[in-house]
Image 1 (cartoon, rainbow, N blue to C red):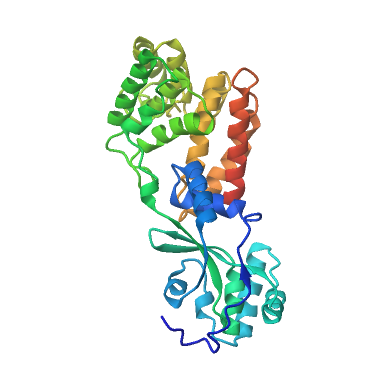
Image 2 (cartoon, one colour):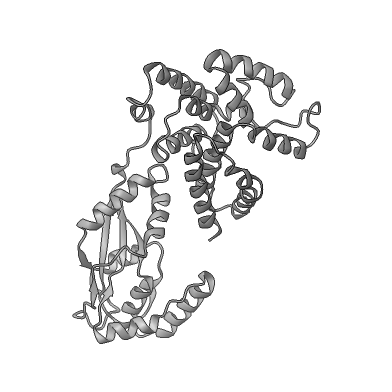
Length: 367
């Protein structure tokens, strides 16, 4: 498509193949945006596509479709508008972008990294180079860009087959059968429920198990079963009625879980189950909360399970609910972080990885 705003179509700018040196955080952010359940795989696919990508002229059709830039609307020669937008962005983000330096380099023919664009199923997302695009538009230049193409079909959705495929060779046949039973119980228990971000509730316990296996390399029969079931007692009557009487619930849940999966799973699941105000044992939410935190800290498996739970919850917070984000961040920092680093046993290495990931996620949410 011909540009109506460009005065000099022959000027292709002075853009070179861009470096990823300063784009690690942005790549992780788009991985979370487009493939929250396959972030590590997305980053690997991105790097593969980046190596194969070539510089191309940015045409108006693609430029106008870029989701996160207003550079297409800059008229040729309107540097006041560029100044206004850059000043606003710098104030909002604390950045120090210098568009005049970029303008000078373009005019002198000096080399600049080409802007990078992600093409994800024909949805175009600007990864880097917004200021360069604005200046190019203002100068009437046709910029070179690096378009990195990735298709959603490269990230097959998780299902029962893919879930259990990863357990083969890591656990015994009997252990996998036990996890399969817990998988079915969790799926049926949560079948009618949906989470705030719009996905079915079962995706949460399954995603937590994937954090253990895919991100931690942790294949632990008891922990995987415990996480699959960690919300069943709190959200369904399958293990007992936690809202009627906590002590009655605990007795019934211990009996059922021990019969099915053993004492360790029973202990971990019950500690991960937040009680309700039953007006028998607990008469306020504060009593419930204090008891819950005390119980968690008595078991390293329960702490690890809670860390996985909190990490996935932080990753899947709805972006349109800032108050919930603020509440979750404050709760994590004030209530959970203080004891998340208390694991000192054989699972300490996993806790350290999780704590680092949780802190990274908190930074993203606060940023």
